[in-house]
Figure 1 (cartoon, one colour):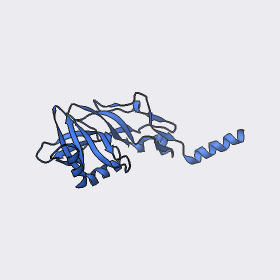
Figure 2 (cartoon, helix red, strand yellow):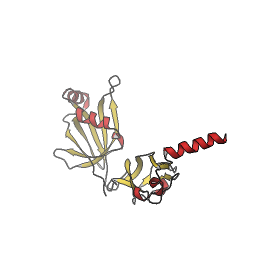
Figure 3 (cartoon, one colour):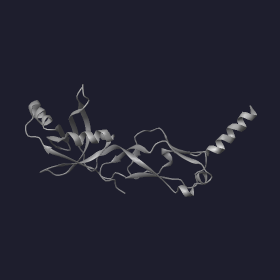
Figure 4 (tube, one colour):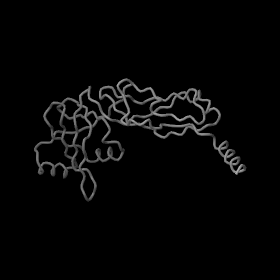
Length: 203
C-alpha cells in the first residue's frame, strides 16, 4: 500500500532579496525557495504558524510533501534546510528540493507487527519489546510504503528481530548497512523474577 503524501501549501513570493523576505516575515509568513527537478527556482511564502507546527511534529527534514502553490502544478518536495533566528530559534527561511517520481529519498517508515496471536512466545506471556517503531529507509519517491511488516508467526521468548529478518518492499532498503535490532520477545516478568531468585540461591 502506497503511503499518502501530506500537502503543504505556499504562495509565490513577489519580489526577491532581503526586503521582500523581511516584508513576508512582518506579514506572518516564512520565505522559502523551491529548486531542482530541471526547473527554475521559485520564491515562495508559507504560513509561519503552519510551518512551526510541522517542525514541532518532528521528522520535517525526512518527510516528503506535496507542495501546492496556487497557479502551479503540484510537486513533490523534501526540505533541504531550515534557517533559524540565532536568538529565538524560530524559522526564518526554508529550502525545498523538487523530486521526480523516480527519485530516491530517505524516510522514516512505520513498523507493523502482525500475527502476534501466532507467536508461541507471546502466548506463553512473553513481552514484545519494540526497539524501533519506525526505521529509516531509502525508498522511491513515487512508491512510498505506508509501513513495513514484521510477521510474528512462530516467534519464541528470547527471539530477536533484526532488519534483515524483514521482507522489504521492492526498491526499498535500509539506510544503515548494520543489521540493527527492531524488536525482541522478552520473558514474562514473573519468569524473570523466578530465574533471578534461582540465580541468587545458586550464588
